[in-house]
Amino acid sequence: MPLVESISDAVFQDTLSRAVHDVFSTMLGKNASLVESQAELIQDAQVEALELKGAQIVGTVGCIGEITDLIYLYSSRNPLEIPFATEVAYGLLDMEPDELEECGEEVVNDAMGELTNMTVGAFKISSAT
Image (cartoon, rainbow, N blue to C red; front, side, top):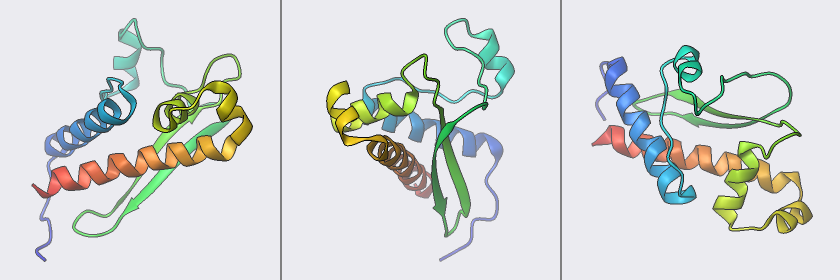
């Protein structure tokens, strides 16, 4: 198997952006896109600035092969709003809030891990073509 000599940042970002969009659209019925920086988030009136403060749920998947890396998907655990990770669990598992509450936090953590895994898988498939 030939080694990847190098992947430009533009190709990497485009491939990752397509993977995120495809997985979020297919699995969650949500539109998602990558942004280049926190400054871009702040400029968008519909999206609040990303702050990695407080408790987090983190999905992590490692890739080994032609591309070797770790991919992280973060979600805050803000008790004043429905965390992204909970929305992911609702969407992936087609559960109502009371059903999800009965199952416990492990289900939310597993859903975040699975979403991260699907995104990395889509990225790897896209980068191979």
